[in-house]
Image (tube, rainbow over all chains, first blue to last red; front, side, top):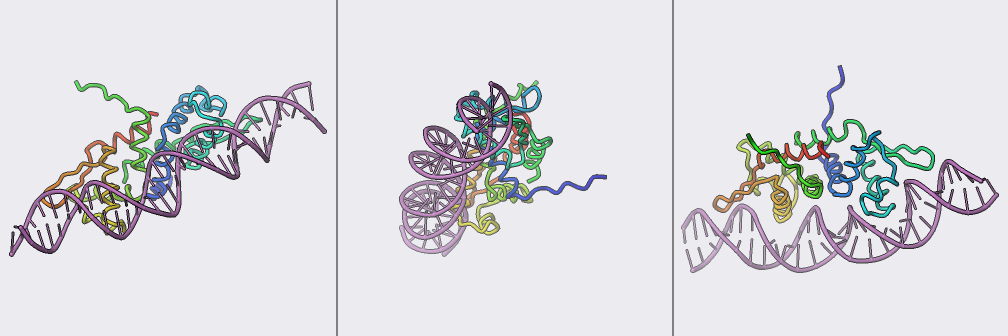
Length: 97
Length: 97
DNA sequence: CCAGAACATCGACGCTTGTCAATACATAGG
DNA sequence: CCTATGTATTGACAAGCGTCGATGTTCTGG
């Protein structure tokens, strides 16, 4: 049997919520989640947000650091995808306060 | 039959997550949720957080404005309680991005 | 080896946020 | 009324955040 999941500290949860506390980052998650193959490169994220490339890169880094996104570099491109179960775990964090 | 729930805009969700993006506010929610009668007055919240009374009042206002807490004033005291279904709806907001 | 493309990092700027001390606002009790 | 008590509001400050332009960095193609 799998070990019991240890629920994250309130400080750890706050950091995840902080990553979610920006409309543009929510848009990034939404776009990546809706992508056909589950991953998207930065070049496809810049235009729908209307933000500069450095800003998008910054937001993506915040989401990666929060454990919500995964980054894989292939050639010159960087592909971002959802970490499996991360959103579900974040939702759980709201309910188990 | 009840009307279909309209899912909140990304900006509205970000506002709720912003309210959740502070460890002290998560502690407030946690304490109030665990209260025997489901409500707590400010005087019982100041000491466990180690913060000044104005700061606690400020955090409570943020949570009320986000629709997570309800404020009822009885006499000199102000009692705060969870808005029913608010946390569940916030959790849902994470999953339906 | 060189030029270009995709992305990350840096430095800077205004704006927001968390916190406190001081003050104002109610309400209950004499 | 007057005072004491519980909260809310205000003003101020440092710290953090979102955004941008400029600059690195890494890979590809020729």
